[in-house]
Image (tube, rainbow, N blue to C red; front, side, top):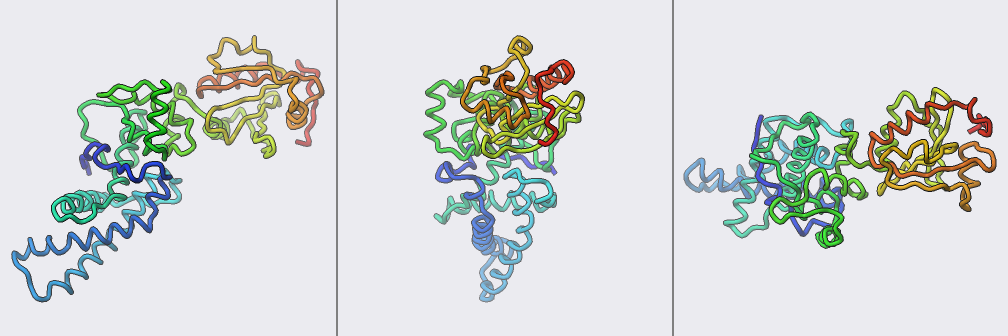
Length: 348
């Protein structure tokens, strides 16, 4: 099925901005709106089909509205899971025809509210707006479609302030302040370029779709995305988490060298690299780097990594998966035999 969706700007609801999407689009709230929309639509649609009112209209009318809501409830739940980027195991594949039916029902309910004065289905519309945004961003990133809906847009545009706020669960004022600080370049007609917006949004804890950044070795990442990438990397093994330092320890399978990562980091991806000199990675596009060997916390870091006193601790911020991959290759070029000061502590 190919259903054209209007611009997300006509769907996203400003009163819902600044609230986490999971709260604004809870199933209880969406189900209530769906039931209301079915009740409001059933009567005019039935009258349109019959051509006149009947005395028995209330009974069948109520039954039809209830049956319609029940019929679409599973589809609504699947679409909510997809829009909130829940794990595939937590959602069922939506039925193609019913997905189209749900979209048409929301569009009709919105139209009816405009002429009848009834409240419009704000949460259902907001849900459809997020669906359209995810489809557009995934298409831009070259990610294969996982939902049988397509957008009808003649040319790719950037993201508006409203769209960025909705994708990150932020207030409009927060995004506008970021623009005023030049954190993103904004064009009044085109908005913020998609790649630039993705690099900014991935640094926000509420961003719904960080997996889009992980689809490219060139887009900005954070510690969470780096940890996911390392989990699937055959050259690296996870050893343990250190909650007091908010770090995880990893070991290369080829030479047993260890390094630490801010696994829960959102703002950036930070690596702690023992036995590494900046000259060894200075050619890589790092954001920042510093020697942490003399810091007050250095002893704790060395203990966590199984290092002897005095071993160097280079810290660097890694902007992309491409840069992270290059660092892992550099680490793999030198083995334990070449680093006599490394403590062979296998108890970690």
